[in-house]
Length: 268
Ligand code: SAM
Image (tube, rainbow, N blue to C red; front, side, top):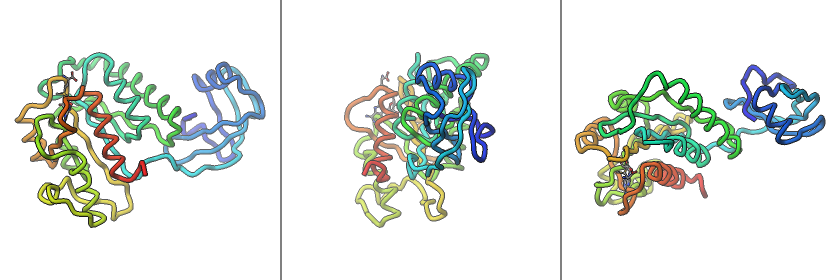
């Protein structure tokens, strides 16, 4: 269970709200049972239940755990707002696979109307989905979901925050995401690559010990415009293909994420 840092004491934890309900009503937990609690940032432990109430469960810390289920690289998924509930699919599946952050954005062909009034409710729902997916995947951290960004704000972030950034473009011919990512990681382990040598995704930041921040940009149902691709490249993105088939926008994000994590060595 991901619990607020304030409920994570030195020797004990408190599990409240929906989590207490789930633990007691759904899992039928009793005194003496054990579960894993994390504050989603830096602490994770096996805890043993000492007191059960339907709204609150007290537990003592039995063993502190290493935060070991997180990828060595941070993959940020920038997803142009898709129609219907597809963003929820992107967040749920992307969290299971290992994304660190989601950046929904609006681009020229985004169909969904951005409604600031509905934003708080939608953000709450997206965060709940990320929390539940992180729990089921046994992750140590809940991915961060940023407020919806404009195209300009996203490009600023690409140039200022990302160590590598790839924009998925179905009209890109000849430069696949595999080559692009191998080129990025190759610049760290001296692997070279003929095509990639001329098209590098970004500088290497692993030397400072912090995980690289790798950004994947995926367009809306109608795709990116050529102008957007040019602007993204000017901001430091590399335009890549995900193969010769046109993928649905929510599929594209998952394929790109899996490719990055695979090439980073995350999947062995
Ligand atoms: N019409 C479909 C839909 O409703 O989802 C497919 C839309 S596709 C144009 C949406 C986005 O997925 C594109 O902007 C691009 O970022 C990504 N994409 C899909 N297939 C791709 C491919 N083969 N190579 C690169 N990017 C791709």
